[in-house]
Length: 263
Length: 164
Image (cartoon, rainbow over all chains, first blue to last red; front, side, top):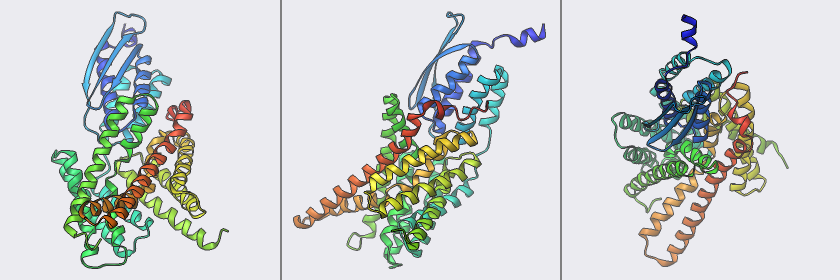
C-alpha cells in the first residue's frame, strides 16, 4: 500500500503553487523570459502536466493542465517580487529543472531542493561593498585616470553604494535611491576639482557613477525582445532606461553644485 | 606592428578589466566558480577590444566583435562548469560600457542649456550628438553582440545545466 501511495501523482494545486513560486523567484532573480518558461515547463512536464505561462513585470499568469486528464486544470496569477539579482538561484533552479527531468525526481524531492536553494544566504554586504569599490576604481584605471582619481573613485563608490544599500533596505523608491546614490558618488569624486587633485578629475567624476549601470536588465530586455517576448522586453527596457536617466539626473545635480566653469 | 609596449598595455588593460568584472559580478550574487570565469572572459574581451581599437577599428564595431567573442566563449565555459552562460557573460561585458562618452554627453548637454552664445552652442550640440550616438551604439553593439551566440545556439545554451 505504502509504495503505491508514493507513486501517486501530487495534488494539482500543490504543483501549481510550486511552479508559480519557481517562476516568480526566477523572474525576480534576473532570468530572461525564455529561460523561465523553459525551466518551469520542463518541471511541469515531468510531473505530468502541460503548462502555459505569461510573465509580466509585476505579475505572472499560469495555467497547468493534466497531460492525460484534460479536465484537471488550474489557473493562477502570482505577484512577482521586485528585482534583486541573484544568479546563484537562477543557475541552481535551472539545474534543478534538468534534474527533475532526468532523474524523475518526485514532487516532494523537488520541493525540498527548491526550499534549500532559496534559503541560501547572499554574499555579505560588506564584502560586496569592498569588491565593487575595487571594481569601480579599476574601471577608472581603464579610462586612464591617475592615482588621485582612482583613490577618490574608490571612496565615492564605497559611500555611494553603502547609501544605496541602506535606502533599498529601508524600502525607499528604487528610482530615488539610484538618483541619490549617483549624486553622492559623483559629488565625492568631484572633490578632485575642488582641491585640484591630479590631472584627470573629469575621469573621476565620469566613472564614479558607473557601478549603478543596470547592465543585466538591459541585456535581458534585448534577449526578450529578440526572442519574441516584446512586451516583457519593453517593460525591462523602460525600467533600465529610467534607472539610467536617474543616474544622469544625480550626476547633473552634483555637476551644477560643483560649478560648470571649471568642468 | 606589435611592439612590446602595446603588448604590455594590452596586458594591463586585461588585468584592470578582470578586477572590474569581479566586482560587478559580485553585485548579482553568482555561484563562486562563475566569478573566476567572468574575470577571465572580461580580460580576454576587453584586451581584444583595446587591441582592435589600437589597430584602427572604430569603437562600436570593436565592441561588437569583443562582445561576440565573450558570448561564444561563455557558452563553451558554461558547458564545462554547468552554469547558464549569461551568468558570467553579463558581468564580463560591464568593463566595456562607454562611461566617459556618457559623461561627456551629459556635460555638453548642460553646457548647451546654460550657454546663450550661438557659436559655442554649435560646438556643444555637436559634442552632445557625437558622444550620445557613440554611447548608444556601443551599448547596443555590446548587448546584441553577447546575445547573438545565445540566440544562434539555443539548444546548447539552454541545456548547459544538464548533468547527464
